[in-house]
Image (cartoon, rainbow, N blue to C red):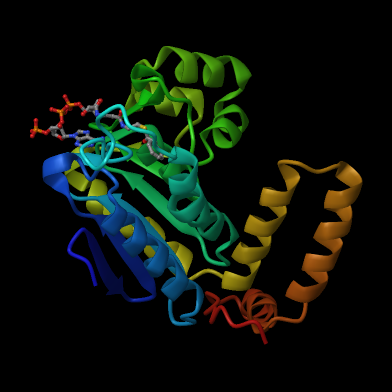
Length: 262
Ligand code: LHQ
């Protein structure tokens, strides 16, 4: 267990809080390892049905820790660092069969912003702001930024954000379609947990299928999607939650979903 990542369980929600507030939760090796381990654990724990990812203090995450082995003019291999830590993390988040709420509580920069975009439902506090800071230090977006940004906000905005490195406010991010909703700062933590809690009570297998099919759609054809929808819906038709959903509808009562596969 690492102090740089707070891991809490609230009902069926695993809350992950990036916790290096004095560095705006910049990602060092310890924090990246803790995040990778936390997502492995969530994937294998059936009692967890949703994830809430947020940051402690006034920042969400300022990206890679630039104080950690980045200075000097010696030879370095940033690709190796992406291969061993950032990229596995993005893949784990996207393939996790449970929904992830990213709660951008404050400033999000570089790979910190892009890791957040790997979540499923992205919300922000009005205090949040966003920057693809990479270009300011001679780098390009990584941690999935070149994939997520054009899909979320379109080519024109993605190219401008990546190339100019300008900061956008939470209000602009909402207008761009980068985030689902904004909340007032004082209610943000409560609203974020409420959203994750509501997801944790939904039919988890259906959420996993939605996630899988929307992930696939980003690089797919209509024919492929129609076939995938058929296959996944066939599986969902045999889950206890489908039986419960239809029974509850007929009995005119709220459904109680377990999230079980069979
Ligand atoms: C930080 C950081 C930080 C350490 C603020 N590190 N301390 C790169 C390389 C390797 C492989 C993988 O991929 C990557 C991907 C990347 O993420 S590259 C992009 C890295 N991030 C940045 O370039 C952003 C750097 N930070 C900033 O530009 C500003 O801090 C932002 C715009 C995020 C926030 O500005 P302010 O609100 O004015 O806060 P601040 O600058 O005063 O920061 C507060 C403290 O946090 C400060 O420390 P201090 O001791 O002076 O109070 C900063 O040094 C520290 N901090 N970001 N990335």
